[in-house]
Length: 372
Ligand SMILES: Cc1ncc(COP(=O)(O)O)c(C=O)c1O
Image 1 (cartoon, rainbow, N blue to C red):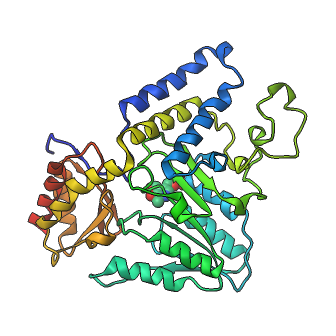
Image 2 (tube, rainbow, N blue to C red; image 1 turned 180 degrees about the horizontal axis):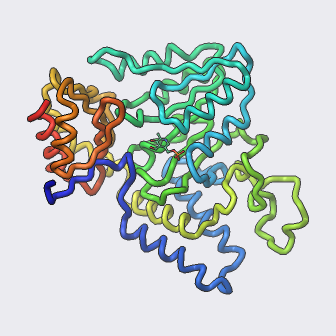
Image 3 (cartoon, rainbow, N blue to C red; image 1 turned 45 degrees about the vertical axis):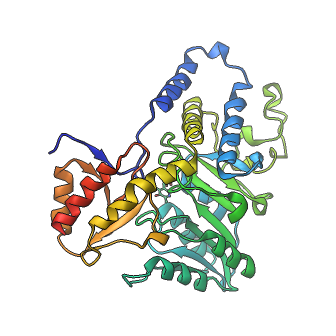
């Protein structure tokens, strides 16, 4: 195996920034001196993190931002609060990530409603455009919810969420967005898309720790029931002396949906440091950088031998390459060259980030072009 390692797999897990590691260690060490820990420490970092994430997605509704352990948990909070009629349907994207499928499978099963998957069109040209059209077409008066990503997690197809939001509004359906594979690296504006909920795991493009995430819940969930009933989500939980004066009311906004032990100093510190660095670089700069190092490389590939999405619907930071033959051989060559990608279905998923250079992408593309 070649000595030079080329990591093109941020969609699998981002490497840890040194700053994030230091922040985590600082959080870990807090438990060395429990006598120094004040009740306010359980809230300060959490509130700061909510503000940081709010600013990243362009909302000042910080009360609507909550901390979650996983996307499945975040989607669970949503499905916990939706009732369906037998005649209604839920629209998902074909081959969507399972954490945003299983909760909908249970919900539609419970109410005997229909689960509709909009599959990727078989066409090799204009595929992204046609997929978007098919999503819009599948949303009808009977659609209660559309739940999907901003880009497809396996091949990076970009979905036009503003258009999809328009259609869901027309038919009175909710839009739930899994932002895990794009928020933090691809510009996103909550005010433009206006999803009813946005859910993100922290350990990929947000540069945070594993086992943590962030979500936004809009006003449709204001009177809902959370998955768990943590004391810290109740009104006045800041006053530790009064915790057994049990409260009927939840804290403001969507606070009820945050996980128990959300204040985890390690997780909060790490994610906070990750988002801080992202904000310092700027999401637009990050995305432009990745676009500039990837886009020119597509000239190296022969489209009759390797399928890839057209520019307009292909995310720069996550895209699929599908060799029409020799997949096994190509995967072996990639591995021998110590290049790290993921295989999702029959697509080679490539997901570069800020630590990559154009030569990294060229190394991979050369390997594919020579063997396809
Ligand atoms: C689109 C998407 N959502 C969510 C996740 C992670 O889900 P969870 O936090 O439930 O493990 C992944 C992981 O690859 C993903 O690609």
